[in-house]
Image 1: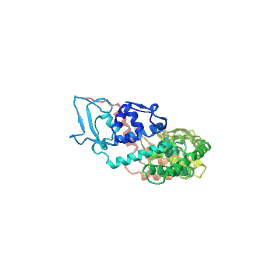
Image 2: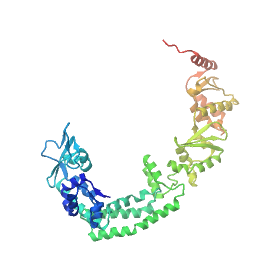
Image 3: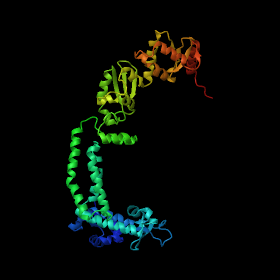
Image 4: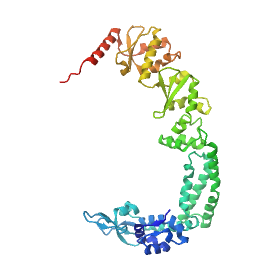
Length: 455
């Protein structure tokens, strides 16, 4: 919306052909270096506010590079020349010519960048295109007299349903969007001078303006009824899914307007997921699991089995992909029991690994299975377990052992003693004697005690 025309804008306009189509405006521009809305007659104020920006754009499109000079852009070096539009001295001067009336101007870089498409400096628009554009502007002015700011209104209508924080489902917003697209098409056809008669176009636009409030009331009623629903689809969810490139889930949310069985496993947008914290904590407690925290930075649930010191993590994505339907009162994709939750979880950190090794050693002691470590094995994530048949020790990575044998520590009944013995037997690699492991310990201790020799 325009409230005034500056000096440089005025100078561009009075040298452009299009301004002749608006004698009321041309008169003011010729009489004043600057023109404000207060200087405009009441009958033309709407045109000044809403059509002048398009006139100014058309003015810029009338200009091209001056073909009578070798290069339409000149670097003056240490010299300066005032811009024909704003008067500012410039090092770089653009020589431009109006394709419609032949007027030539010397313009500074800032004014060129503000008013004229740089590509047009060399190419310019064809005369026919400029004439068609001028005709469109005239018709825009005519319809703007009937509906002030109609172009801005149509742009706002097209975006209105996207402005609400809650997603308006398709079955509510589709009739509105269809009507807006129809009005937009009618308007654009009118500007181009084709389509329906003027009075029919005006009548259809008027009808929509009169009935728009009915659609808005439907939208706001839906929002008021669903704003407290923790599973309602939100605009933040849509943006989050756009960042993740999930168009299919976006379509589902737009259709249903809320989280359903189809989408529950694919959405853990922060604000939405925070609303599920309490319910998830309660679900975990039914299995004897204590939720310690929700790690939003890494998107996982940190929890423990009872008072056990081993902290486990379950990624949001995994929780939802297996058990998400529980949040909306549906049957989960996998049975929600202690064994399955632990199965899809992993250790949180070094201390959890430390506690696991300690508890695992105690758990298998009664089975007659020995476990040894080197002094630095925890740092290296390596332990040594005794193989039943050979009576020798095999080297196993702690993370691999945790993944396989955590059920032993948490009392799940699996793997059994036989399962563990088979696992140990199938581990590839060298077998170690107790003495070799002890020697590894001695080597590590000596390396730690030996002073660093500097040459």
